[in-house]
Length: 199
Ligand code: GAR
Image (cartoon, rainbow, N blue to C red; front, side, top):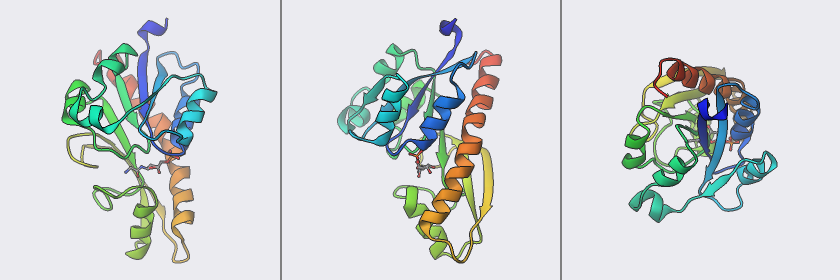
């Protein structure tokens, strides 16, 4: 009865380790299926993950995303009703936010509102956290609105930052948290909306 399922699109531009965890989590799930991977970087690792799992992917380009239809027609053609950003670095255009109001969530590798905003992604975040001698970092899962890293928070989880940390070591600790919490949080948010008749 796949027509009753919620169809997720995962937007990712990098290695795709979070996308892989989410795909695995929803494999054979009764209510949710990953129907599309959207990527703005030809050759990104996430595209191989999509191919390995027989999930269609859409490679997008700037002009259409920001000045065209924001790929809304293509997303609708795949019956997408919920969008998960997992290492996607472009700002989401207003048009797409309006089309999927309340149905786009993002993961950020720090405790927002600190270390968010344009240019704050991946190792840049961890470098800044270490440079500022923070003793704690973590992850933020949040709804997406018109501003970078700004919408309502769904979940924050913290981890320690050690004086001996390098950005790579901290990234590993953060990735472990993301893999543990992101798929289950996506499931919780989507199922609550589905059960409330909002999806
Ligand atoms: C993740 O750590 C995610 O939080 C981060 O990119 C990484 C992608 O890793 N996102 C941002 O920095 C967004 N501002 P992955 O490709 O292995 O899932």
